[in-house]
Amino acid sequence: MQKTYAAITAVNGYVPEYVLTNQELETMVDTNDEWIISRTGIKERRILKGEGLATSDMAVPAVEGLLKKRGITANDLDLIIFCTTTPDMPFPATANILADKIGAKNAWGYDLQAACSGFLFGLSTGASFIESGRHQKVLVVGGDKMSSIINYEDRATCIIFGDGCGCALLEPNNEGFGILDSVLKSDGAGRSFLNMKAGGSLKPASHETIDAKEHFAYQEGQTVFKFAVTNMAEVAAEVMERNNLSSDDVSWLVPHQANKRIIDATANRTGLSADKVIINIDRYGNTTNGTIPLCLWEWENKFKKGDNLILAAFGGGFTWGAMYIKWAY
Ligand code: UT7
Image 1: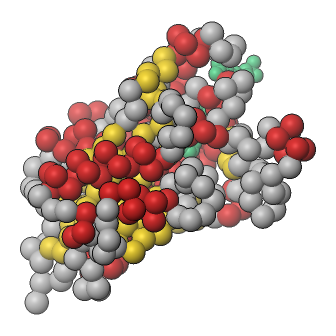
Image 2 (image 1 turned 120 degrees about the horizontal axis):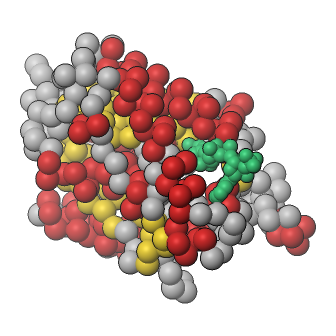
């Protein structure tokens, strides 16, 4: 009997309207367009503006669009996995908030925290519920309102991050399409290089933590860069090698959008030509959990049934991984 795989059967995305350009950042911190483009590849990013708007408010239009595309309702969903580093609140889970907002009465759900690798970890986790036969429709959402944890006086971080959200629906497939393999890794020894120091049980919010700006994302850029550039490329190559995929066999590389130089290194290591590498970092920056689903959403019309996709990510934790998907539609 043919094995059941979890196939992506629909994708969608949402980015807020407000465009924060490099030119506007030049007026906020000591930086310049040329430096940002040459070091990161980013020209602009989106920011969710407005009182009372959170990560789940970007997920709602993304998910409602996905349900419409697939011709199903929120009540058809069995499980919602919300991959985010900027949940609406520490608890309850943003998955629960989203379920309420879209009216998904039959789904259970939870949040998944793996920083920039979250969406890959979420796809892999969601796939297990499909492969086991427990669920028929698993929604995996990846989104972040990074602007809520960015210090717009810190030029080392504020130029990189943006807001956005994407989502994918997983359903069973018995014809050999779907998520065929993944290599996922984490190493907590890297936690000091990319984190948010306060607001957790280690350092609850206090006047001191606020004065010390410890509720913002902190990054030792160069160190993270060195780990990211090697590990993301290695793990992408590993998943290709163990599935006997040459660069000719791969149609698309879908990399986490953290830095154009890290994407280029991954493309070089895997031998994939530029036309196969999906890049939207120039328009959206690093949306953390949003990068990979936003890429899938924007390139969906170019994918053909049977295309081999390699997804790869690296993020805080450290966490990293790569996934091999045979596109199902
Ligand atoms: O998605 C999760 C994982 N995150 C990543 O993968 C991000 C990895 N890191 C990076 O992408 C890069 O390290 C950054 C884009 C964050 C920084 O680029 P870099 O090439 O590593 O720059 P750097 O930190 O080594 O700084 C080089 C110089 C420094 O000046 P000096 O000491 O050489 O005089 C910085 O002060 O550039 C300076 N600099 C800037 N200059 C203009 C740092 N930030 C800026 C800025 N504008 N925004």
